[in-house]
Image 1 (cartoon, rainbow, N blue to C red):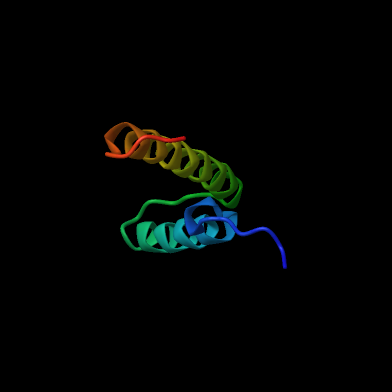
Image 2 (cartoon, rainbow, N blue to C red):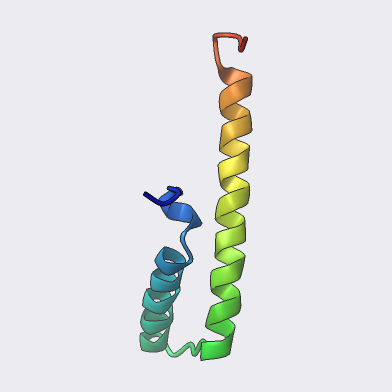
Amino acid sequence: MGELKNWYMSKTVWGGVVAILASCSHLLGVEIAADEQGGLVDSLTALAAAAGGLVAIWGRISARKRLR
């Protein structure tokens, strides 16, 4: 079986989010070009990775038990 990853690290998930946002923004009169969507997916994936790292660090700092 392949390596597992968290859902927020998936470019497919973020691509879907960007597609939904682009579609909704179109209804509001804001256009997001297809080439801009790719960059937005990369940025959101990087942001999610950074957030995951911060949560992991915070979890270790706030943990009540020490590591061996």
